[in-house]
Length: 199
Image 1 (tube, rainbow, N blue to C red):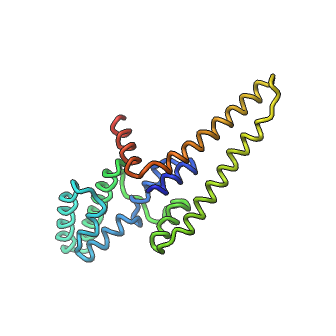
Image 2: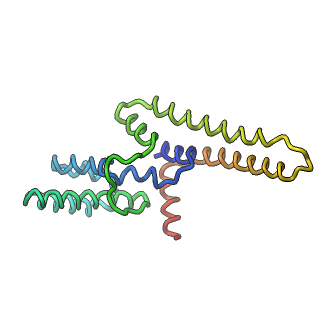
């Protein structure tokens, strides 16, 4: 998740987009649930939830296995129930809300698919190039705005304020990127959960 956090900071996106990866019908959580049901191996899904949630998922898993034997219609409904339960509990463990499963094939942007590809292929090279390229482009853009506004006449208050605005935005951009890279995923989730509990 650390790479996802950095990408959020670089692209100016909200955390919801990165988290949405896990609530799709073609996302890794549902894929794990499908494999678990087909192989009757709950360990494949229990790794997606916290210790305190194991009992709930194990119970749902056993109920689903029993019900899906009744008929094709029952199998479809039971599987959907299990997918929703697993994703809901997984997201709650991240401090994120669950508002239903999202359809397969959504546009997740370039970063998430690249991260998944890196894990599948065992190589971070393409992902590193993507993130480095985005960072360098944004850094040049933010820095360029500061440099373009830096030269102004002392008595031109409008131009001076434009420079200050560009300068402040540049400093905040650098600070956000640095803080995101230095912040662990554990700290990120704890902070989000604290914020959600305070609202």
